[in-house]
Each structure stands twice: as structure tokens, then as C-alpha cells.
Amino acid sequence: METLKTGSHYIWSIVLFVFALTASCGQKEAGNQEETAAWPGHKSWEMGPFVKQNAANPVLLPGVLEFVCPILEESVKWEEKDVFNPAAVVKDGQINLLYRAEDFLGSNNGTSRIGLALSEDGLNFEKLSEPVFYPENDSLKHLEWDGGVEDPRIVESEDGQYIMTYTSYDGEVARLMLATSPNLKDWTKYGRVLKGDFKDTWSKAGAIVAAREGERIIAKKINGRYWMYFGDTDLFLAHSEDLLHWDPLETNGALKPVMKPRPGYFDSRLVESGPYALLRNEGIVLLYNGMNLEEGQELDPSLPPGAYSAGQALFDGADPSKLIDRSETYFMTPEEPYEIEGQVNLVCFIEGMVPYNGSWFLYYGTADSKIAAAVYEEIGMR
Image 1: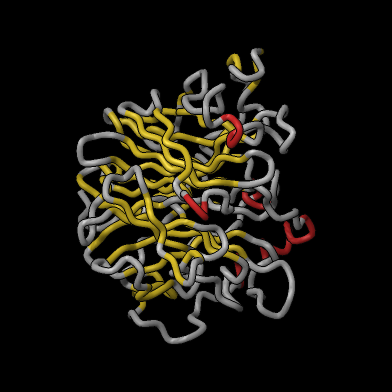
Image 2 (image 1 turned 90 degrees about the horizontal axis):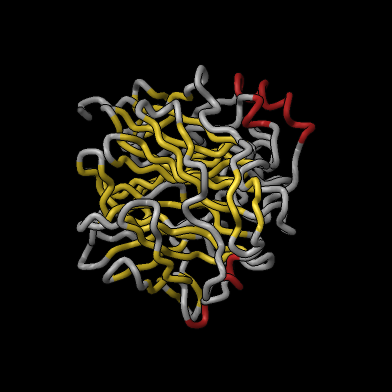
């Protein structure tokens, strides 16, 4: 999850272990696709099962790295408080994990910056000593300071540029932003994704539609346009000719939802994009984050109130605005101690996914405090 997160539910920490063992994976209503026999409760188009790498998790922890903040003009321990919500890219034969890191200094529960860590096996990472993306004394300082820059999602363009969406937070409004890089270290900022009447609308979580080519994830046009899902309550959609300038779908002067929360499900409170949206044979598969309501009769009674779990949605490969199907239950939910207790309790927040060495590696923030990995060994992937 991201800025202005819901309060903790410590009382549910022990209860969740019971739910994890007893919660039914049965469908609540008939789906449009048949279940996968080896993965009961889930549908044939869904990716998985993703297996949490418990022996290695968490794969990334806070540290004491320092750099000189250009705004404060002093050395800060930029990842001392928490690390979470990463993007992932395979580059030069390694997994490059771009992760959100917080210090203890910012007035908004810490300032967020984006660090880079490298791995040759997907589980053991070596961090670069300084962040690669952060608020500076530039034209966007008023949008990025002192809440910071958060929650990156990254795809490649056909010509090898890296396109990153991220959230800026000025202490009052979160805004969906965009930047590009040739190498994941040197970045050019392009500012807000939403313009005009929507330029100061609360917006986050830009997941661009892309396809896998080997171990690269490359943005792809559909009907002559690139597409991006975004949002953190309802899910919205925008399109672009060049990956830099985006126009959202509208209805009656407002953003047009393409997916909404569902009463009684794990995503009864909100839906929010996970990694990029993946163009596959079945259509566009979007792994997403869902939050359970905190109270009331419309929450999912099999989960603690306010828990963040992950699901999947299938959109039409020829019409990205058309929702075809949706998972009936989560494929990931907080179960381990580091997922249950932290800066914000009861959170598994998926955000980075890469094909690597014949498997899909999925990275997620745990309780807004640490980073963990899950792996899906897809048949025929090699």
C-alpha cells in the first residue's frame, strides 16, 4: 500500500494465523472460467501458484546507508526506517530491485526515496549505497517534498528506455508521476501523469500494459495506443501515443472506473494496481492489491478487517477497458509475522514482478516495513 495508509489492527495479528489455516478458497459465485485443477479456487487464466520464499524472506531489510540529501544539505540515513513496495527489472543478467525506502526525518512519517539493489538469484541482494531517485531542488520539489517519491512500477520501451511511474507526496496530495532512464540510475522526470482538471486529483499506482520478451517486460500498443491502469480505490485507465503523455478515460467529466471493490470479498475496501499489466494469450492479466473493509457487513469475514491481500483480473486483450473476469479469492494474504506486524499491520502489497531463470519472481512489501519474494514456476516458460 502507499501514502496515508489505514491504521493498525494489532488485535488481529494472532487471529490471522487461524484464518490462514481455515479460510476457504471456494468460490462465492460461479466464475466465467474453469478452476485450475492443481490450484483449487483459482481460474485457468490466473498466474500461479506463487510460493512465498519463507527460507529467504524477508529478502530486503532497512539499513544504515547514508547520502547527502540535496534539499536538507546534510547526510541522512535514507533507508533506516522501512523498505517496501519495490519494482523489479532484469538487466545485465541480474534482478534490479528498485525499492521504496523511508528515513525518520520527514514530517509525513518519513521521507521516501527509491534505492536500487541487485541480485543474481532473486533472493540475495546487494544494495547501492545511495538512492537512485529522490526529491531534489528542481521544478517538482513542491510536489515531492517532504513526503517523497514512492512505489515505483517499471516497464521498458521498445528502444530500451525504462519508463517508471511513481507517486509523489507533498504531505497533502498523492499524485501519479512519470520518469524515464536509459540505465535505472540516471532519471529524467516528466511530472504529473494526469493533467488539466485532474492534475491535482489524488492518483497512484500506474501499471502500464506490457508483454514479456525473454526476460524483458516491454510496453505494447493495443489499437495504436499504450495503456495504463491506475488508482487506489477504484481502478481507472489512461492511454498514450508515446508513453510520456497520457489521457485518462472519462465519463461525464470524471475519471471512468474500469474495476471497483466488491462487497464481501478480500477487495471490499479498495483495488490498486500491482506490477505492470501483462499481455498474455488469454488477455491482459493484472495482478492487483485489494484491501478488506475495516468494519461493516460488506467486509470479507474470512479475513481480518483492513487486511491487504492480492488478487488477479483479466481484461480484454483488444479492449483494455473491458473487464472479462476476476479472481474469486486472493492468491496471497498476510500470514507470516513480518507480514502481520510492522509500520502498517496486515499487509502483503505486490508491486514488482520479473521473469528470471525460468520462473516468475514476485516482490511485495510486508507490513510497509520489509520486502519479501514469492516464485511461480510456470510450465513451459524456459
